[in-house]
Length: 147
Image (cartoon, rainbow, N blue to C red; front, top):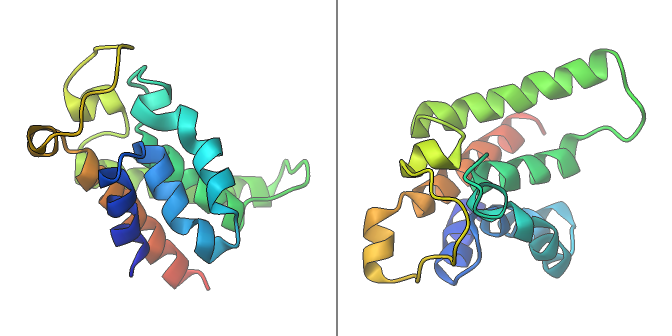
């Protein structure tokens, strides 16, 4: 099963968008899935339903960072290249979804409150499963091209 399919399954199972994407890549990148799900938990709903950066983007970038990030206090070319790749991943997501901001994608500025129940209507009205798939496919493609 592709990671994008795993991500959508995790999302429809009830995990948030960030957990779904980062969790889908956990096994492949050698990261403990339970730990990945815990780390990604606060990023759903655009950082705890603040409607900031889409959680699917956050999950994608966490997996990207784990795979391609640097671990020394870089200030030069390595950091610049990493940031360029980060912007490219975000740009690809934005191209397909119109924004990387949860509030723009959902067309709501509602902050906080309880998460919406995952009903059939939820999946018809919300583009979140599409965002989870898109973020995962973008990272899958990046990985394929950077082996």
